[in-house]
Length: 411
Image (cartoon, rainbow, N blue to C red; front, side, top):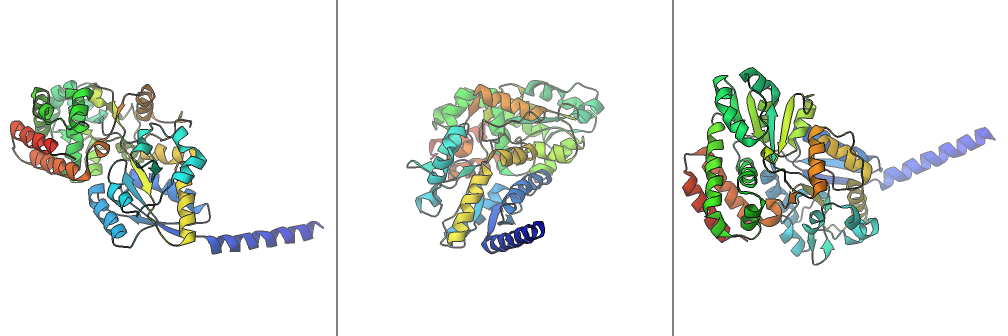
């Protein structure tokens, strides 16, 4: 009897396996997560999706989002869509949604109660058009961080700074010790991220909101932003000699004690983690540059291009559901260094830096990201200006005038 049951069970298992393999769907997923920490994080998504019997076909695009987004959008517009794609929270997918090229996820979101657990609600609002939801948000990333190398400051014989003013004051001693004060990748988006972080620290949240959200060119041209551009010019001096391109290469300068610090988003945590460094022991993280402990709620979401194949559509819904599920949220974000989009999961094992971010998020000290507030065209104009400002001797006054003109015409 037991033998018969075993044979029967084996036959059922084989039959199920054959059905699963027949029903398994390959889904190409495009993204730009290619650094060591990012690759470790995205592998958690791939493993979870493959466990459903489907197959994650990795479509990593080397480079930053600025490199990857035009490729992604061109494929969708050109009739060669992938199964799913990463984009940032915000207005990047607006035109694709309006053209009817992205899948409406509202029914799935309503069924699973996404509006009840996605926190802050602005993450879903950023991909909602006419009341319909078009993305599965996967994390909260903030650019408002200063990362500091303990080894670099020890070598220079000074204490690790606790805020931006102390960091600037320590820069001469770092330089005397042969250490680059500020690591900075030579790309407009990185320089714009640093500028935005300095803006919130120097001008405050109210002034930032007036300019970035309300498009107030008068404030952008005024005395408060004059201080911002002067502070950015000072930071530019600290970064002279930082000749790396990619953000993770700049982070590596901090990890290897060749640079004192870097202004970069919390995704830098993934690089420190891969390098085996411990928050609070090997490096310090200062949200809001240690001045205004505020996080901007940028981050990543996945969109699903409209396709005709029913099996692909089913796999798309399975992936969308999986991306926001509790276990996958924990596994992914612990490796990515980002905060989860769910407020109902246990992250007690998170490191010192993530715990700081969670406390700020819980207190509600958040602001929208630039991607949410400004159109892609306006963002590109600002990034181009920042690339010029950081790589030349353009004066703070000239940069401010150009910036105010962009804000005046901003969408």
